Image 1: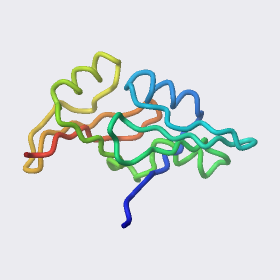
Image 2: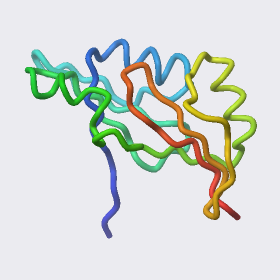
Image 3: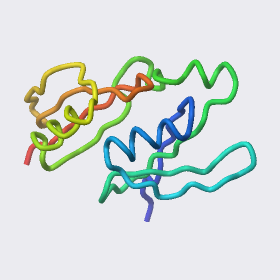
Image 4: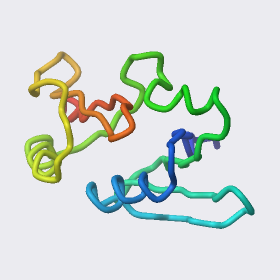
Length: 127
């Protein structure tokens, strides 16, 4: 059996990313293991099947990738079974949405961004 267990998100600072994802969005901090100059930090929304590995940028190339890891496209997809509730909670937490919610053939979706410039879809897949 194989499954996708984690995806790396390059961030400028571990603690700032934890504060946003865990503090504002309510995700769980699963691991925060010191490794010298680096830390092994994984987070996930409650019930999430894939973890986000927070990786602090080191060097100019990695710093340039912050907020542009998908080349300007939406690179991350947060699925929900309660779009309206999660959308309202995220707005109340100060999350920036780039657009109003819209219905697509695959579900209800709106693009939002984290404080580092990464584009995400909040999506409730069609039944």
